[in-house]
Image 1 (cartoon, helix red, strand yellow):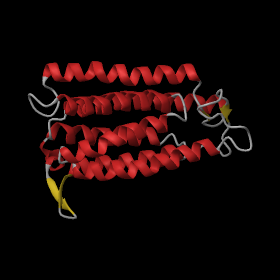
Image 2 (cartoon, rainbow, N blue to C red):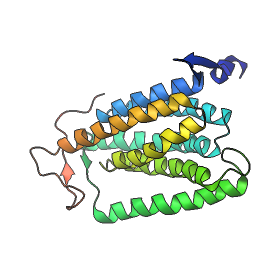
Image 3 (cartoon, helix red, strand yellow):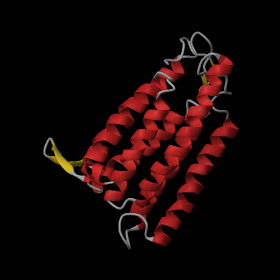
Image 4 (cartoon, rainbow, N blue to C red):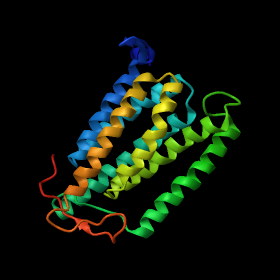
Length: 230
């Protein structure tokens, strides 16, 4: 592993100390979001590689929840990749839709209950930040972990709501990353916020000229207007 030791080293990014692993992982994460906007299958392998780098970065600063998150993302991205590939083969394109109310209820319940349960595990094992870390920090770590899993699942299912889940993750991720001295991650989370808003509008606009199902209406299938980027 000595050949990859440089990933644990830092460099100056506009005066901020940044790990190479954190930098490269987040560059690939940004690329993943851009590719997801285009509904490209390439988004999944790029996300897997980015998560490998971010796993290394998280271990550098003892973020147990975030490290576990990257492992789950790698596994989930592999499943999502296969799901999108099968969808394109069967339907000719990656079609997206709003989730129905029962699906939304499941997502919200999983977000809340999953965060509570995982935060309890992290606290019990002292696996987040440092031994004796306050519960609010541990809960934030758990929120990002659980939210990422749910976002990955929603993305694989092609729910437009997956962008909203990432939005909830970003709102916690920015201050947590800065507090953990992963400054570049904090900057990228802020960029994610803007890209997520664009993503919501982009995926939703693909309902035109058909009727789009808002969160207050029953879900309908939204057909893509162009072939998925290869």
